[in-house]
Amino acid sequence: MLKVKLERQLCTEEEQALACLKPELGGEACFCLQLSAEKTIISCESCELNFKPWWIDLLQPKLLTRSRLSSRKTEAVAHAVLGSLPEPLVYDATAGLGRDALILQSAGARVWMFERNPVIYLLLYDALIRAQHSSLASQLKHGLPRLMPFGTLVEQAKLLPAPDAIYYDPMFPSRTKSALVKKEMQLFHYLAGADPDTQDYLKQLGTLGSRRLVLKRPQHASREMLSGFSQFSIDGKACRYDCYQPVTADRT
Image (cartoon, rainbow, N blue to C red; front, top):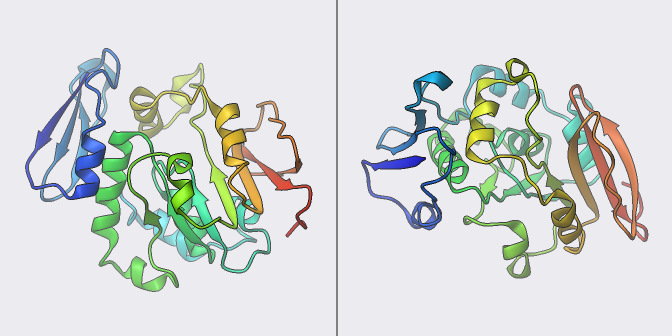
């Protein structure tokens, strides 16, 4: 169950996402989404889950250091998504925490993010507002990644230019040993759950005319086939990036 505490006036983008919130998000656990003047926070009022109040922070020291050092050579996600494309326009189909988008932006891409979970969207929108006037934003050639209006990439694609690359990071199924999963990802699983439509959505993304489509998967996951595309994979530390390119496109 999810309840909302409004403590400030919302912008249009936030209002659109808030209108799509469903009280049953989170299942039997009781969550509270607080939108205050300081930040947007999600907290859990179910004591047995032991979640501390949490928000997305793009200015964490570790993330800032990683962003500063990001390149196609140091980051597997940048290697997979950007290849040798010069300053490509990348659509991040599932923005989530915004970290991968930030890494790709730091490596030279222009990233537009899309998010269809209203809670995650509101948390990420707030994080970007708080990061706008930071040194991070001024250090990036193209500024911070751009968060598009609430909704899916497929829903908005007809009004947008064709991207050079699309990055798709669906929610992985929960591990049986939950201690192996960070608290923030456990929270995400409660709020969003696994994506049951990964294969169908991948096919839809394949129709949007990008030169490269990258699917992030667990190392052990089976590979999804996509008709009309050649495929290769790049290994990350704890995941795999399956790269799809139209058979008529040169590998770049």
